[in-house]
Length: 410
Ligand code: KG4
Ligand code: ZN
Image (cartoon, rainbow, N blue to C red):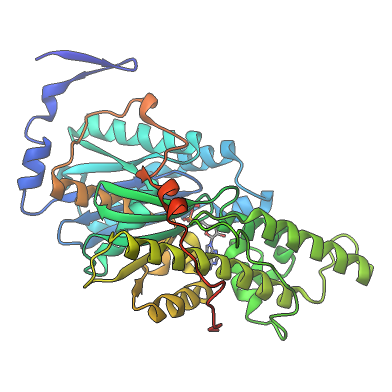
């Protein structure tokens, strides 16, 4: 028996005996507890290797953050701290099992808000030590990309578009731990600009939108539009023949339009422009056209380089913005036209949750990927690139895409 120092905590490494990666991958049925605290959701779930969600619990901080005009990291940390124990206990209770029935603990270790990530990681370390369980560190975006496989039998490789409040990525998912990065946002993420746009349009002053995310509020408000093409939003980066994204121009253009209309109507304070619904619809269409344009180029690049299986032409969309039915239907129409199938997880699993983290643990145990006994704070990273970056190869390929091949589906 020997002792190893891990950031001021001493562990006896053989207390985990019997729970190594080889024993985990050989077990016929594995239960993994997943813990997600990378941003503003405290999510926990128990998933087994049959892809059954045994129990889950989600504490969303959204209402608090909407009130304060965005996620304040210190507040997010406090709320995670207040809810982490409840979230884990509730997920286990819902699963009708205890920690002794858990074979491994998967926890988001990167990327995300450092203060938020640390709460989940510390709690996972505490549980691992107390119950002698191995830990599986999880990359949040990899988890978004893989969770769809609980619901659909989608073989590797496939193309994934990950759209959330913190990220916008196009990636080829070659395996559980093998990703190619084709493109990413150069500035903001689509969920982030929708949240900011909703705040600038003062959507939360309309009671039905006061407690939901900005992205969801824009989707709902856009349904009330009478003239959805009233405002024009030019498609960003049209001349760049790559798969990168940029959303800040769309956001700035929206702010200019709001200011102009407010001044035309002589509005002050909390008053909302009468064209609000049309503006939401036009803005949502602008975002969708940009996503569709880059996705189409990614498909063509993959075909050129033979990166996807010719028989299974599968595309996955995931992350909070993938909940948006307008965006999803229009992406579907574009890729179906190109001969591809498109999938997304159920809405509640597109946004942050513990299920995707537990599932990532299952995928990793199946593959026999290394577990650990303790995650050091040095291994928790707010920023963490996804996979092998081949963005320059995409640029070099110089793939032309008629912009935008987009026939609107409502
Ligand atoms: O994946 P997620 O829960 O957290 C991050 O990892 O960022 O995504 C949250 C984002 C928020 O920006 C929220 O406004 C957006 O997802 N979102 C939506 C919708 N529901 C959530 N955006 C557009 N339409 C929706 N229905
Ligand atoms: Zn996320």
